[in-house]
View (tube, one colour):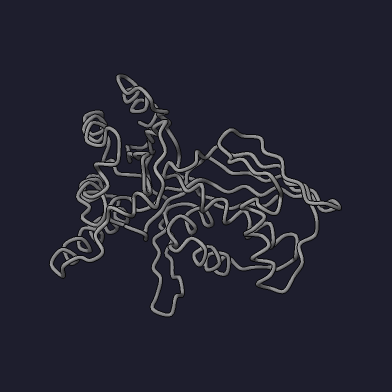
Amino acid sequence: MKQFKISIPASSANIGPGFDSAGLALNRFLTLDVTEQEEWEFEHKSHFLPSFTDYADHFIYKIAKQTADRHQKTLPGCKVTVASEIPLARGLGSSASAVLAGIELANQLCGLSLTGEQKLQYGTDIEGHPDNIAASLFGGVVVTATTQNNQVEYVRLTSLDLDVVVCIPDSELKTETARSVLPANFSRKNATSASAITNVMIAALLSGDYHVAGKMMENDLFHEPYRAELIPNYENIRRKAKAKGAYGTVISGAGPTMISFVPKGKGAYIREQMEAGLTGYTIAGLQIDQTGLQVN
């Protein structure tokens, strides 16, 4: 009887101007404990997980079946116990984690021997953009691009000497709503300026100049100016985090969570300072997860 455990980290995408391109893995996890048996069965052990009525309607099962069908394989029955530390619709990559869970579930059950690149491509085909998928898959900070032939290329940055603090509101924000406020087109002048800010941010992260990286994060032109009105306490959180020593604070993914990049070792202090006077939020000091998807 086959038994295994799949663990997938949360993720934060964009990092300000790295819109639909840059992402990082965070040490909150979606986990699946899997045991083969005759019939399919899902059991949830977290209030963060959505309800379901039948295994065939379960999102992770649908992705697993889609992946198995892609390889002309049939999924054997199993019991899947799912636990999650990743809140839904908060900009922390819950959807990407679930997509990867389904892909890896099929990979293990059907013996597909998928490469990391194949998992990234499959996940991107489903999600529509690679940033969250790549970060949760490979861990660390990952910069991605989709080429004209729909192939995904990625570069994983070396370990960054940073802590992160997230401000997670009690309210949700659907990605579709956050995307609906974005402009359909940019002028060449605006696109050039926005791209230059992204380039400097990535270069600053690579060189360890986190003060410049933070400044660039907070000068995004691609999405934050349009989404700010949808994010509770957007300016208040940015000002407060900066005053307490954060390098920069941006929207995590599509929001409404805000994520601050802070000096290594200062995460706990800044988290405590951010809690004062900010009600209706969960404030968490997190680490950048360096391992990504794991199977045991």
